[in-house]
Length: 312
Image (cartoon, rainbow, N blue to C red; front, side):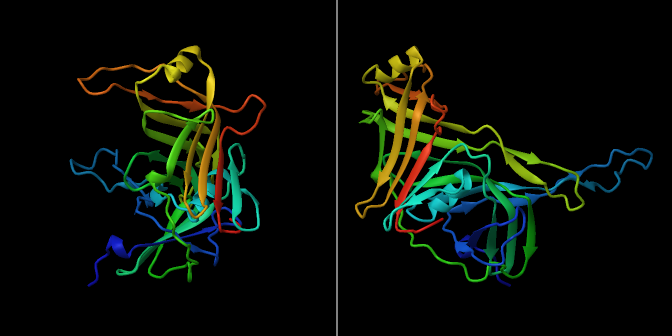
């Protein structure tokens, strides 16, 4: 009997025309590192009395389908997750192509994800998926991956794939070595780490249905937050935090072959941090920043991806 192995796991994704209706084709094979996307249905213990000390059979509760997927930050497939988080991009160019994703859209696309373990075989189809949160960390070394948190409508299990033959992507990854962080157009000195996270704050529409699925997931007030860790060498960031003024932060990656990924956050506020001295080593300060809509109403965050893919 074959046993399932993560090394053989597969994932395919396709955007839906109608929420919760899995497409019959158009799937793309998605690279991923880990996946906790799944459905669970807890049991409610019986509260009835008068039948002795042993309890009666439990009742099944509502089904919850959600989880996170850890994916590589690459030049092509990552744009699929950005589309899920921000909506359709504005694409220009004739190759290379410039895809611009912006925050603030009230309408987000839904998609279907299929995860497969062909050795068993066992396939799980998750319809009505929407991106609740996406974020990643920047560091000096290591593998650059992002975490995508997903809310799904439900799960359908089967022994055969419903994704057909998915299209493949040209996997070319960005690395930490390719990253940079700037403040008001100038590189931040002595930065040792950074983190950024975008949330759609999805509101699950938990109507009463015979199939136990949710009716949908509506985007609420978005949030763009993060953290920058710096060695304390000057008071530029501290002075901004004390004064309550904003700055523009930009997180970027670029490859020598021309592909780039840029996250621009024009209006960022810094909190006044605690400066701790924990020993003889260098003093490090962390700023847990928050972004806001620009004063002229322009988007809170813009993500620009330049690659060789014509459309998303």
